[in-house]
Image 1 (cartoon, rainbow, N blue to C red):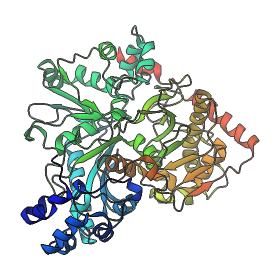
Image 2 (tube, one colour):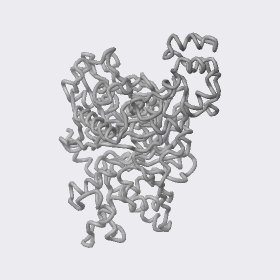
Image 3 (cartoon, rainbow, N blue to C red):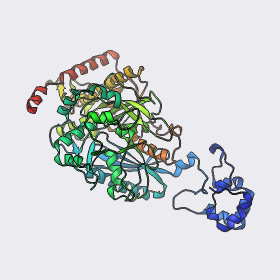
Image 4 (tube, helix red, strand yellow):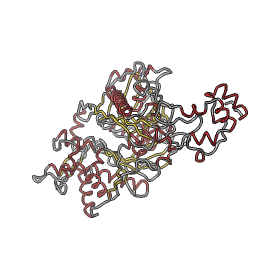
Length: 606
């Protein structure tokens, strides 16, 4: 950049005041010492030569009094605002694409949601154990939510120009396959809890090298990761196999699909954006945890040919340019600057930035992430090792231990939609509190097998202890307790792997709205449960990732007070003897739920 002296100021102002960068004339000071308003800047920071020239040209007053379209005072080019000033008028959007619904929220610089819009969409269950989405429905739900939430934002008197960027958070493992020439999906999305791959997983576990997989990628072989979903579709869907053989098959998780389409897909000038972040890539079993790149040995194990399969480029979770920008709609041109798998996003939204901090999200499933710092920890107790976040800019990636539970909120939906025991999710506490305890009932909600720390693919949903005394209150209580028992088992495993017990558990997600469930969790785990008043922590995490890339926040330290207001802590109340008996009964029920249909399924496979 050409440098000027104050002696040049009168000529420069007269020639073209608009082209002057005040930064070229100002002696640089630390941000903390810089003036906070344009008025102070004008009086104290501009050299006298420039100030007099501006006054003489009658331009200084006009320059600093111009009213921009946005609703904040505009500073001269090159002068930076304080963090406090940014937080007053800068906003970040967040796409939260989940298993049963999609939302778009707009947060202010304090991490508070200003507006949101949510759409529920149809889930498809074509066969027992199968779970699918229409990929185009997912995309349409995102675009509609962005449009409707932006309308609400403008109706509140805000301006689109103040939305700095958007972030995306998404259901993980769900696998989408599309034609990279037409940009059209070739099969429905295979959703993360889908268990059609059970027989395939049993075969893979017997394959040489299977025992080494978890050390490299952090995940055990199960029906959960994207890799086995891809293999099943390649083996069973002719059109997908043909696209693979011809080298035109693109594979991605939901984030890659949405980013690709939101950027305009194949029609994007400059070519399509085909990327994923490390948190999502770590759920495929194709990425090496330490290098954060695809691993040839892992791909070889799954017999994936990279010359035939198009894999998304792995980029940091926070980046100002890697994810492109929206190609259409009211936020056209706004950069997509952050991307996190939903559970990593929730950890970020809970500000779990220090090793030893943990969160549990009670959504469709239940997912507990424990920050272990800058080196991955491979579990010996049935947990997953995963990437918590990778914010780039020279920062080291952060890893987590994870315990995943297949059924949490979906268990409540089962009570409502399948059994008709409750009319809505909001009735859970009322019905459960109609009885003082579970009446001896234990419900192992293994609708998709059991995930961490058990990893029992052949477990089935099983209700134990039913008598003529049993009523719906007992069953509802037992359903809530199933999630809490599994969480307690995961906490025990995390204590074993990490060497120390958790001090407090941060929670979020729809089922965390249940006071009874949260109190039960504190009782069974023996750990205080910390629930925020604002529970949109998953969406907030994606907003934080995007905001860090686009200057809304510069460092993680600025976020420590985000979402701290109105938190409620549930402390353990039940005596230890009662808890031990309850947990022992649960573990016995888990063992009894496994394998009892295995013989029938094996006969069907013959």
